[in-house]
Structures are given as structure tokens and as C-alpha cells.
Amino acid sequence: MPLRIAILGAGRIGQVHARAVASVPGAELVAMAEPFTEVAEQMRAQYGCDIREIEEIAASSDIDAVIICTPTDTHADLIEKFTEAGKAVFCEKPIDLDLERVRNCLAKVEAAGGDLMVGFNRRFDPDFMALKAAIDEGKIGDVEMITLTSRDPAPPPNDYIARSGGIFRDMTIHDFDVARWLLGEEVTSVYAAASVLTDPEIGNLGDFDSVNVILTTASGKQCTINNARRASYGYDQRIEVHGSTGSVTAHNQHEANIEIADRFGYHRPPLLNFFMSRYVAAYANEIAAFVQALAEGTAMPTTGRDGLKALELAETALKSVQTGKAMQPGE
Image (tube, rainbow, N blue to C red; front, side):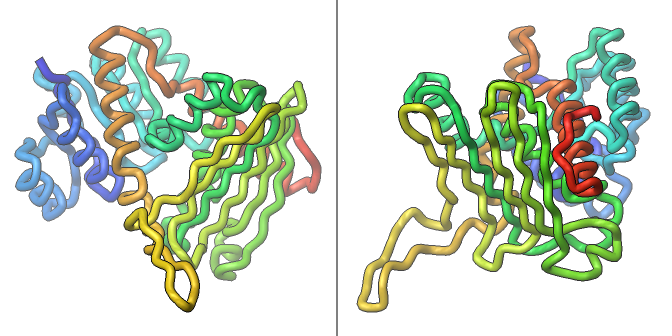
């Protein structure tokens, strides 16, 4: 029997996950909850799923798991509700913007013996997975330095900025998770610098749009993260890992993997423009991993603890900006 799934929230990320569920063998999109009727009807027409209220989904015997794509301030409450209802839970990051609320939520999930996976899709990108495999297979020796570049084509709307929790909790949090995944050690020092360079209104809303972060582990491994809310040339997503015997790099993805040479020079097609096109395979892979973990009774590949640790690094980076000093996580 396939894993019977309901999606809570059919906004942009909910639609991405609906497409992912539809592409994964062993998963079936049974229902969705979405307050906007027009959007809900579009999803029902596209995927053939029911439209149900959240309370109805919690009580439904034909739902095994939920994917939470609602606003961040609802995540922890919904995780607890559906854990208590006996459903497995996949939740988009972050669990909450408050560390103590996250800790309390995870304690309730653990006490109930619930299954929770947190959505850090970049770990499931085929190129990034191949890069991690090269590290694990010893092809570059011991990891010493990592450079993560993540730049959006343009800033999100101001109303999104206002409720996002800030660039470190909303955007850099993905890079914090990737850094922990690739370093293989916990971070002991965080130094961050942040500016407003693309739109003064972002600063008026109390946020930044351009940040650099240096992470260091106890053994001295380093990771540099570079984020910007504006990249005029497209969605910039790169990783370079330098090791004791070599290096491995994951390059940007273009609309086509070709290069044209003429008398004016060398030319390549544009970069894929945003996460919904760049990470199609990653979203499908992470849902497939969620389904597989439940089918086999194994641990989730990205856990509530991963979500907590990434948020902790985000909080520490913000404190570093505020103090102008390197900070220890939890300090």
C-alpha cells in the first residue's frame, strides 16, 4: 500500500511538494488543506486529491502522513497535533523561529514516539549528493575548507521579508544545514557580517540582504557562506570543498549544458532561475527518502535535531552581527 499523504498549505512550496509526491512511487496525495478556494480547486483538478479541513485530516483514517507547508508560526503546533494523531510528519524548515519552542516541540515528538522529518532539500540534490559521496569515499582526503555560495535572483516581497524571521533564519539556514552535513563536525565558532545593499526597505524592516559567515569547528575546519538576495545573472548555487588531497566542486545548473564559441567569446545558456526549477529533483528525492524511511522503519535522514542545530547557528550568526564578534553557538 502506498504512503497516503495530505499536504497542509498549497502555496508555492506546497505546490512544489505536491509535484514531488506525484512523482514518487509508493506515495499518494490523498488530501490537502488550503484556505484559498481557487488554489485548492486548482490542486484538486491537477492531482485528484480531496480538499479537507485540517481537523478532518487529523482524524482521517486514510491519511498516514502530512507535509506541513503552512506559515512558519503554525509549524510547531501542527507537528504536535499530527504527532498526537498518529501521523508521520514532514515539515518545511524552520520548525519555529524561537529555539525554546523548537526544543519543546521536539520533546513532545520524542515522548510520543513520532516520526518527524525536516525539509532541508539541498542535501537531496543529485549534484550535492555526488559531492558528499566523493567526500565520504575519501577522494579528496580530509575536509579542511568549504565555500558555500547561495544567491537569489531577486529579493522576495517586503511582506515576506517582514514575517520571514530574517535572512539568517530564512535563507542562510539552508547553508548552515549543508555546512554541518559536509563538515562532519559540529560548529564551535560563528562570525558573521551583514549589510543592506539591494533595497533600503529591507533594512527598514530590520533585515539584511547580503551576508557572509565563517564557521569553524573544534578541529579547525572552516566553512565560508556567502548569501545575497540579488544576483542579476540567475539563481547562484555552488559548493566547493577543499580537502587534504584534493577538492570537489558542484557547479551551477544552466537551462542547457552547452557552450557556444564565436568571435565574441564563449557563451552559455542562463542559469536556472529559481528554486522551483533548480531543485525539482531534490524535492522529489527528499520525499522519496521520507517514504522509504517510514516503509523500512529507519531514522529520518534530516531530523528535528538538524532543524534545531541549523536554527541555533542562525541565531548565533545574528548575535555575531549585533556584537561584531565571533560567537559560540548557544552563547
